[in-house]
Structure formats: C-alpha cells, structure tokens
Image (cartoon, rainbow, N blue to C red; front, side):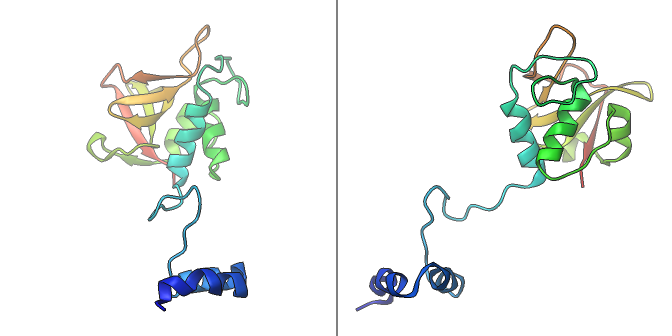
Length: 157
C-alpha cells in the first residue's frame, strides 16, 4: 500500500488537526474551493475586490460607505475592509502612501489625480490602465480607463 492510498484512512482515524499536520510535513491535502498553490490575497488585492464589489453604488460627497461613496471614501472603505487604515481625504491618503512610478504600479495601488501639486481625486488601480472609483455627483462607482497623465501612484503599506 502506498502512502497516498493511506492518507484518507489516516485522516479518518486521526482527525482534521492531524490531517493538517500531515499536509504540513509533506502529505497532500485537497481543500475544496482553494486552487492548488493559492495564496492569501494581499491587502491591496482585497481592497481592489471590495471596491469592485461596490460597482453601481451612488456618489455622495463626504460619504464613506457602505452604500454611498465619494472618491476617498471608497478607497478608505475598501482598504479598511482589507485591514488597512487610511486617512479621509485624497490628499491625506497621498501623503500616507509609498509613492511609486507608473512603471512600478500594481493592481490595488492608489491612483491620485492632481493639478499641479494639488491632489483632487483618488481611485484604486485595477490594471490595464483602469481604476475603480467614485467619480462625481450623479455618477456611480465604476471601472474606468485613466483619462489623463496627471496622476501619481501610491502603495498602501
């Protein structure tokens, strides 16, 4: 009898805790719903997923969720759900992130729109030149292509 064939009977006799120990020391264990080699999502990826889950939520100035958002309210809410604390406004959020170049941006980084040195809008980078954001009064949370080169990127640590 091979070790592989004994695993189910060992698990049945030893219980879940021992099965996890067996997996940790070299046995294989299949967990339903978890792809082989899957790792826990980073806070940035979690924040991105939270923002995407708010698609269609109406913009409201000063709103921080869970049903209405302004731009920085959406980023603050999304990162809070991912276990990270951000200040309230886009400018304050820019000052609390690690600034990265466009060539080093990653999904989940914050995208700050600026005029000169003033930050006026923020969204969460979704990849392929797009962001999740809450644009303006009368609009809703949505995925949109970045429309200007006047952006800076910040990574939440």
